[in-house]
Amino acid sequence: MSNCQSCDMPLSKDPEGGGTEKDGTKSSTYCSLCYGKGAFYYQGDDVREYQKMVVNEMTKKGWWRPLAWLFTRRIPKLERWQK
Image (cartoon, rainbow, N blue to C red; front, side, top):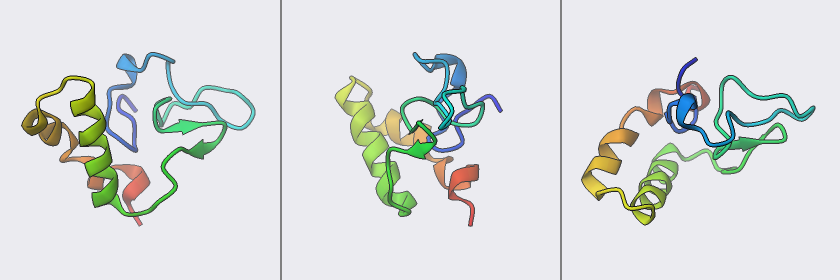
């Protein structure tokens, strides 16, 4: 997969090269901002709340809010959020 299946960030842009599993191996599914040591950092299951959190974090890093929202539209369709 080329994008994180939690936040949709391209894994090629991940500063850590991907999240980590419990055994320390790199995850090929989730980025280091969402996943580490085999667990998600955001423990909730409300995808809309998660999207808002991601947009807020992106705007803190200088993204224009409408553009940040545009980049998070696909989050509900990602593997993590399918139930």
